[in-house]
Image (cartoon, rainbow, N blue to C red; front, side, top):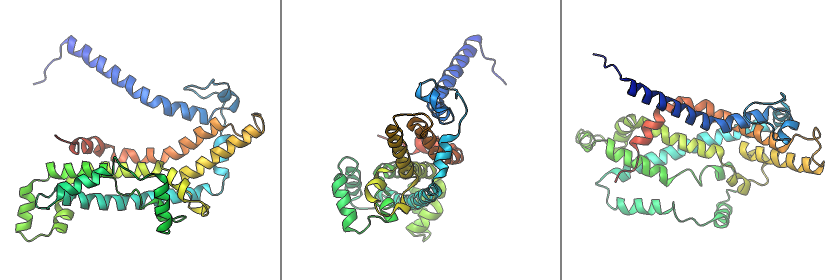
Amino acid sequence: MKIKKSWKDKVVDVILYVFLLLMSLICLFPFIHVFSKSISEEAYVIANKVFLLPKGFSLNAYQKVFADSTILRSLWVTVLVTVVFTVIGMFLTICAAYALSRKELKGRKLMTFLILATMYFTAGTIPDYMLMSDLHMLDTIWCLILPLCFAPYNLLIMKNNFASNIPDSLVESALIDGAGHFTILGKIVVPLSKPIMATIALFYAVGRWNAYSDALYYIKQRTDLRPLQLKLYYLVVAATESFQAEGGVVGVMTNPEVMKAACVIFATLPIICVYPFVQKYFVQGTMIGAVKG
């Protein structure tokens, strides 16, 4: 039987829909603004006349981006680093989370505390650089993958997910049947944890895709190993220096603000294309893996 809503309930629904629509538009406004600047003529951007709609249509900034022959190589390096980084990070996080979620593991609380302590105490940039140098990882692709491929925060989320959503009776029955822990992890725990795994994988991938500071510190000689974010950073710096050297003359060099907008759109589009495929798992995985008291 369908329950008929009163006029008060309908008014409340309309208010909620309008509120959610406004909040969604507020979230989209920055992206629309940046995109509009990237395809607007430089004179309008310099005069701060571009807000939500582009003024004058120009693709000069994108032409400058693609004119650099090494930009596609940097894109390939970023894709490779992101994929390998995410795979290694997920493997380490899943294995550690499963082990620390088992009550029979002695000292698991101490090990969890030691891992989480690294979230609050770090050595700093200079010790990290010295460590990379001593390990002979400078100017190698591994300096972009190994240092940050394990995140304590992601471990905490996945550990809580395993502890609260994988029944002990299910694991114990598998052990009685002769299954080992690797079998249990691969055939029981992982298939039942797809939402949280998709969420953590998205955290790893987005974090690695957007990072460039470590490449700025560790990649000096091997310019062919510069990831996309660092390449775009140098592109913006070059545009800024050239624009200032020419006294800000429009048409001499692409305005830095326009170049920044084009770089942001170019670097963001791949993530935007991937996100819809994991969106259905994102909210569910975050709620399931939330920290419980």
